[in-house]
Length: 114
Image 1: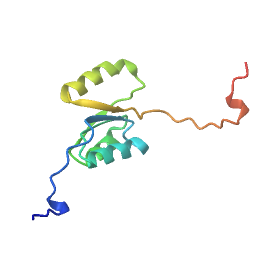
Image 2 (image 1 turned 45 degrees about the horizontal axis):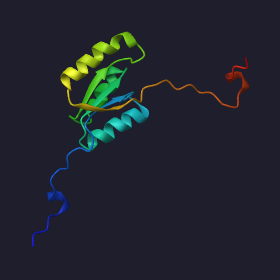
Image 3 (image 1 turned 180 degrees about the vertical axis):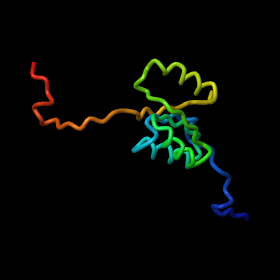
Image 4 (image 1 turned 180 degrees about the horizontal axis):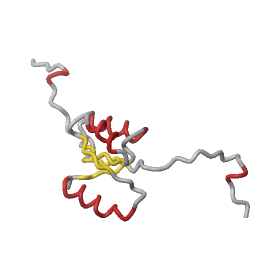
């Protein structure tokens, strides 16, 4: 009887297809990109800060980075074309980009009373 140790198991194929992560330069988006890449998932990381994208890309060769501000919608068609040209196997989007506003729901100044 032949028994294989954990080190001898074949590498599993990624559970997810090539995945776009927006807002990938900080917070949850950054951690998602790192965790997915660590699991062998090809990641396309999109963020506004080129320097932070370079740091993220250093986490492994499964992370491709694209600098873009998704709030500037006129540039989106060109960005999509670039990504799909280089990565035709994209199959998943984690749309994490956004702006956080610090407001309290119990603050009457935050509500429109009209």
